[in-house]
Amino acid sequence: MNLHEYQAKELFRQFGVAVPRGIKATSPKEAVDAAKELGGSIWVVKAQVHAGGRGKAGGVKLARSLQEVEDIAGQLLGSRLATKQTGPEGLPIHALLIEEGLNIVNELYLSVLVDRSSKRIAFVGSSEGGMDIEEVAESTPEKILTVTVDPTAGFQAYEARQMGFGMGLAKPQVDHLVKVMHGLYDMFVAKDASLVEINPLIVTGEGKLLALDAKVGLDDNALYRHKDLAEMRDSTQEDERENMAHEIGLNYVALDGNIGCMVNGAGLAMATMDMVKLHGGEPANFLDVGGGATAERVAKAFKLILSSDKVRAIFVNIFGGIVRCDLIAEGIIAAVKEVGLTIPVVVRLQGTNVEAGRKMLSESGMNIIAADDLTEAAKAAVAAAK
Ligand code: ADP
Ligand code: MG
View (cartoon, rainbow, N blue to C red):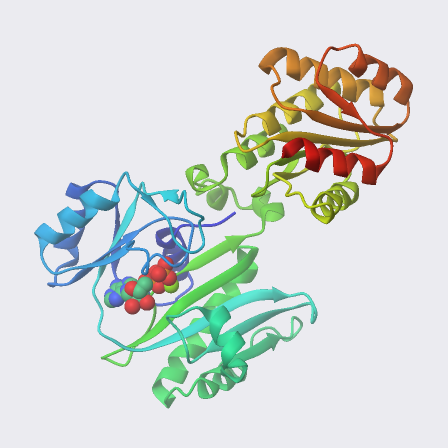
C-alpha cells in the first residue's frame, strides 16, 4: 500500500525528518486558506496522486499570489494527472498539498529499501537528486551510493556520515543528514515500510536539509498491526479490479494485454502468462484463484476478468488437484449466466473430475475452445484474441 505525499510527510515529522511547512486542501477555498495560513509570497501547489513525475506532468506548480493558488487548485482538483509512471489514463486528483515555496540550493536523492541480496535495510543516496534516479544509475552508476545497515547493531551515525560525505555535503549538512537517516530508519522499522523515497532531499539557502518530496510504500502483510496506517488507504489511486480482487481475497494483478487469465496456483499462473507471451499474446492479468477455490469464488474471478473491456479472450488453465474441475466448470457457467459472454474462452482442464468438468462446459452452449495441452491452449488463446 502506498501513502500520499502529505501522509508520508506527516510520518516524517513524527520521526524528526524535516519537511517543508504544508497544509492539505481539497477545494480551491481550502487551498487559499492554507496559503494564507502558511504566509509568505510563494507557494507550491502539489497534486496528491500515487505516482512520481508529477512536476514534469504539470502536477506541481508554483503560485506567486493567492489568486494563482486558487486558479491552479481549481484546474487540478477533479482532473486526472497522467505522469510517466501512471499510463495515459492517469490518476484522479482529489487532494492537494499547499507548501511554502523554498529556496533550493542543492537537490539530492535518498531512499530506504529492503535489500534482498544482503537481507538488510539499505539506504541508497545520490548527489544527483530531482531527476530520474534510474537514469542516473544507468549513465553515472558511480554517483549512486549504498549503505546497508547491520540489523543487530542498528543504524549508526557513521553510516550517515559516509553517505553525506559521499554525496559531497558540507559538515553542517552531514550533521543534518545523520538525523534524517536516523529518523527514516526508525520509521522504516516501526511502520513496516517496504520503500521510502525522497527525491529530492534539498539543501535550502539557509543551509537546512529538507525532504521536499516523500514517497512511502508499506508492507501489506504487516498492515494488520498498523490500523492507523491502513485507514490512510486511498483506493481511488489503485486499480479498480485489483481492489475488487482484494475484497474477494483473490491474488490478482492488472496487466496491459488483452488475454484474461484464470489459473490456479501462482506458479502455474506465471507459466501460463509466459506461454501466452511466447506465442505472441499479451496477458490482461495475473490471477491465481487459489487451491481451495469454490464455484462461487471461480464465478467472482470470472466476472472480474470479464469486467475489463480490454479483454478479447479468456484463457482458463486449471490443474485440479485440491480444487475439482467440475466446481471450476460450475463457477464459470454461473458467472456467464449472470453477466453474459461475448468473447471466446479457451479452457484447459486437467486433474480431479476433469471428465465431468469438460462435459458440463461442452453442454453449456458457451463458445468454448477446449484444449488438452498447454502449448495448444496458449496458441488457441492468442489466436482467439486476434
Ligand atoms: P515529483 O517527483 O512527483 O515530480 P516533487 O515533489 O519532487 O514531485 O516536485 C517536483 C519539483 O518541484 C521538485 O524537484 C522541486 O524542484 C519543485 N518543488 C516541489 N516542492 C517545492 C517547494 N515546496 N518549494 C520549491 N520547489 C518545490
Ligand atoms: Mg520527486
